[in-house]
Amino acid sequence: MRLTTVQDKETTKLFHRVPHLIYREDKNWAAPLESMVEDVFTPEKNPSFKNGEAIRWVLTGDDDQLKGRIGAFVNYDKAKTFEQPTGGCGFFECIDDQQAADLLFDAARDWLKERGMEAMDGPVNFGENYMNWGLLVDGFVPQGFGMPYNPNYYQKLFENYGFKVYFEQYSYHLDTTLPELPDRFWKVAEWVAKKPQFSFEHFSWKKKEKFIDDFANVYDSAWRFHEHFKPMDKDDLRDFLKSAKAILEEEFIWFAYHEGEPIALFVMVPDINQILIHLNGKMNLWNILKFMWLKQRKTMTRTRSLIIGIVPKFQRSGVDAAMFWHLRPVMYRKNWYKEMELSWAGDFNPKIVSLYKSVGGKHAKTHYTMRYLFDRSKPFQRAPIIGEE
Image 1: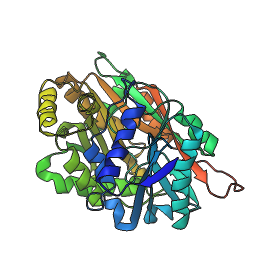
Image 2: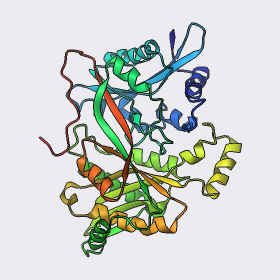
Image 3: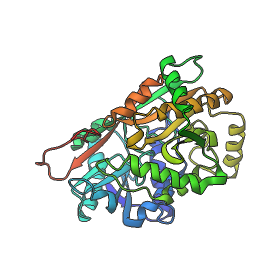
């Protein structure tokens, strides 16, 4: 078998062809837009290149048939926040062949070693973790936008190579057509929502820069205790808003304030995968028209939450419930949205797990973020629980 670095139009085409071979018989898979994948590996489009590097390969057999692909990347700012400098591998696709998988993992490992890394996480994204992050191990049904989907044999390929579970990621589904959700939750939510010291506002394009500032303030405060915390790069937010403008609903993004200061945020998007499944990864003129037509026909009936964050001082104040209280009439008004995916909650963050359960979410999917230590004699440690010493 032969590894080839992706570095021109021809090898880029091969990189995008691999998943179509893997999933050609799988009706659950929605091909991601090739342009969005390319943005991840384009320095002008991905802020992670400010202090990072990335590379990718395709694997072919002796018969020149495609066998797999992988990307490797390192963000030097984040890499140094772990006990051992840690890079990542992702966009992994492979036939059910351990030898092929090992060659792909070896390429990523060796490239990261050359850059001073001592471990690699996978499958992960070269960017924020609300997109393309984790290995699906339970819940092999159509995935929400940005949530990875893969064949069930991938778990075996990762584990046989030596990856171990660093943390588990849980997705919860909420049927928004149900007439009533937990009464106690909504009573508390309404009580908090009407407290005079709190105010709530949904995103608007007219005040985009204000909300970007508010998002960064909440994010930096809420996540500063995480093991691998790095302050929010506002260019990441601008990039996300630009790329998602065609599908964003202003009333799906909420901010909470205490006496005018931002203290919490919630971001949800329509599940564009329900449209992408019809576009085969391309966004040519015909597919642009098809996209607009399918959107107009309200093809998207699911939503996916991307992130919820609360500054520590207010994490027991009930503002999370109050944001859901403000969101509830929006969902009733936009009643073609019938299901909400709350994803993802890490097992290291029991407060968010508890929140998703409290609103009536049912555990539907599990992903793993896995880690491979280059020093095989070193003891493996899972991600620490937030708030525990």
